[in-house]
Length: 145
Image (cartoon, rainbow, N blue to C red; front, side):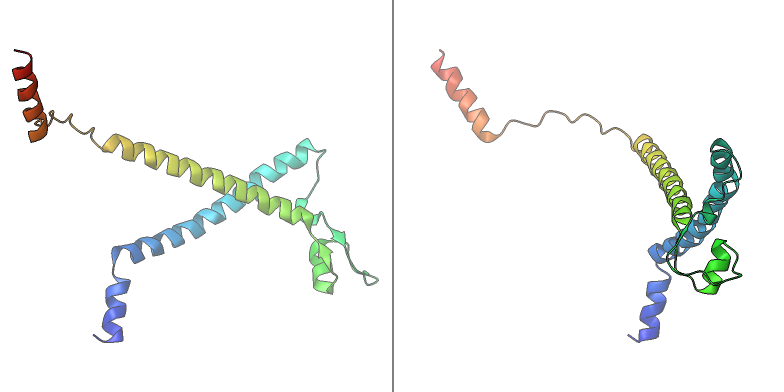
C-alpha cells in the first residue's frame, strides 16, 4: 500500500474529521471567551475596583526604561524593556477559568444526555441452577425423608 493511499485512509476516518471540526470550533470559541473576558467581565471588575483599571497595563518593569518611553505595556515591550506583566496573566487566567467551566458544563450536559439515551437494562431472568445445585437439592430432599 502506498504512503498516499495510507494517508487518504487516515485523513477520511471519522475521528480525524471530528478532531478537525473540534479544533476549528474550539478556536472560534476561544475568541468568544476572550471577548467575554476582555469586553464584559474585566470592565465590570475594573468598575468595582474603582474604575479605569486596565489589567493589561498592570506590570512591573524589570529593567531600565529609556528616556521618552511611554509607561504603557505596549510601549515598553516595543522598547525592549523586560516587563513582568502580571495584569495580562490575570486576564488570561480568568479567561482560562471561564473556558474550563464552560467545557465542564458541556461535558456534564453530554454525560447527562448520554445517560438518558441509554435504556435501562431489562432485569435478567434468574439463571437455571447449575447441575451441582440440582444434585445437592436432590440429596437434601432424600435426606429429609
